[in-house]
Image (cartoon, rainbow, N blue to C red; front, side, top):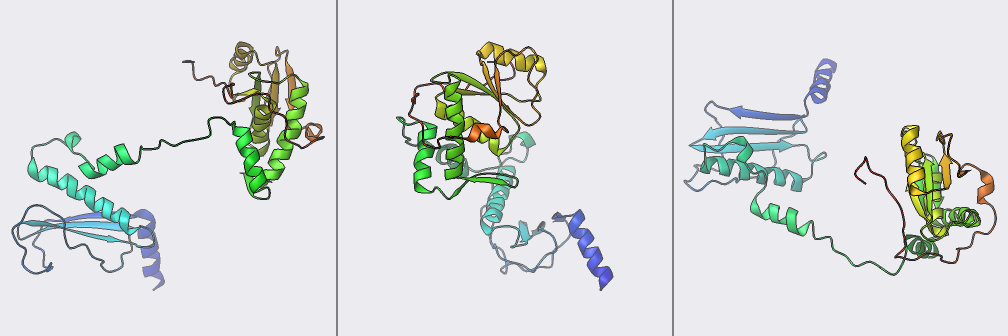
Length: 284
């Protein structure tokens, strides 16, 4: 019994999905004698449990192509399997109509699914409050759910109330360094809770953030800071500041940045002011 179980586990590890084409006479009965009719897939039903995640078996019976699909219901939803069946029907229908067609001419989805993909799923137009900024919308969420978790990174997490309070304290410090509407502030920080607090604080202070990847070459970082005119830089983690950078550097790990008033700051920028600046790989 142990040997059989080991073989079964090995088979599951090596093969998850199975496709079988049987080109010898089949002995199975499928709903009695088939009738002559146009191409279609019928007789969808559940079969015995399979050790594979899914398997597809095809065989010819009375001049008809029969497709049997077994699947593990604990791993696959029925609607996904039905979508696979629809794709098979679309593919085989095209081949039956045009046996000479090339593989790159075969369409995977039918017209109805294509319409849903191109029209229904892409119909994402939605109204949004154009007269408000990102940070004011967050402040409204803080009023509704101050104790709900807002940011999570590894073992660290902040509630909406905690996030807002820390960002307000940091924003006060940024304001003291002259940050206001359309003032660009660089932020070179590893992915972290502190990085998110820094971005939010820049927005609350009224400025625009310039994200910089610390893995960039020093020359690239220096160019971005100089070209953007960012004379204030927030850093965190292993970020190394270019030696010739003459601006002010604040470390997000410095606890003294998170002291003082935690109240929301009076707005110094609006929805028409700059929020961020991004340098791409050379096109912008």
